[in-house]
Length: 215
Image (cartoon, rainbow, N blue to C red):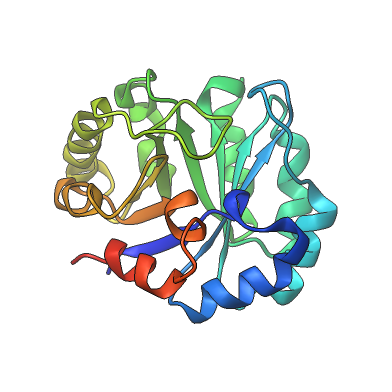
């Protein structure tokens, strides 16, 4: 089953609790949270205090995408909050295997995020340890960007790798996902679709989620 993960980066932060309730009732499977530090990406979002409050009201799993230069300082606190999915960028971590094992030992679904220009072959040494891989389909840092077609090939290559080494691994796509490309993404092997402006940019969240929920 395809999982739809609306990105709260595009929600109305003044009415965040209401937005979460609306998108959950509209059929979202996961809530995607982009944590940005202004260093790894040129933007700042929310940190642990807000994630803690979101966790209190969320009725579906949270997916925290760490777009930060020092993800290791977030892992224990996020695990303590009971966050279900956490992804860290390979481009920022020196001891990747250690961090992935830390998450798995705490019962968290552990993932690696890759920027558009980072080849999927670079994660082969650790692919058997992962629960999911987040493929960025835009350059990270801002919402509302257009999907980069080069990611289609990355999905296909990653799915080929996982068939042999880790068949249960989930592939998550983040950036520019919409009703026009969702079917192609799923056909090529995507399991989780992250969508921000496509969902929150329309008043009918249920209708937008249904457009993404292709089988």
